[in-house]
Image 1 (spheres, rainbow, N blue to C red):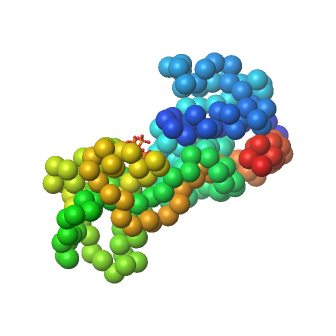
Image 2: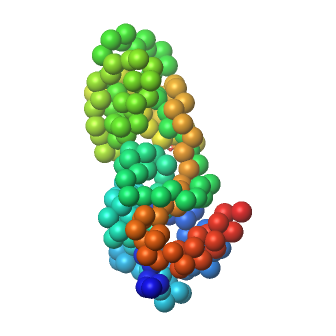
Length: 209
Ligand code: PRP
């Protein structure tokens, strides 16, 4: 049985909390991930390597088995759909909230509310559950700009400190769900590399606690 394991990590804010967690689990990259331009990193374990990618791509790498495991936010996992993946652990890092946000003082249109988001799947479901028809506008970042320039009435985005909303004159409105980062595993890897994955998951689980 092969013991080689690849873990996909998300660039950006999750990484700042992921690296200390992995270090507590005894896994450390041989280069500095935060400053290096490399995408593949060796670790202090001969059989474990790390790949560093966009958070929205982590689930896709793990789904196709290009990475055996991955660490990504619940937001991108829900948006991906979870096909071919097993969500094994809530790592309790990078906690934030998925919310709708808009201008507090502006009344919203009763019909055809325009909603800008990079989470069309979650957003569609949220408004469907409320029996509300909305026009979804897919964006890839800086959602806060959309209501400011009249592209959308409201946005659906992650809120952490709330300072990005505030800086753009927006107010959080509906709380959709709490978000944190999760450890995901490729379903085929879990069968083929069960023992090394179990050993690794045990170490990470202990580091979470
Ligand atoms: C996220 C999110 C908000 C911001 C919220 O963006 O999309 O813009 O953080 O954080 P705050 O409530 O503490 O201000 P991020 O910086 O992760 O970059 P992104 O635009 O690539 O999503």
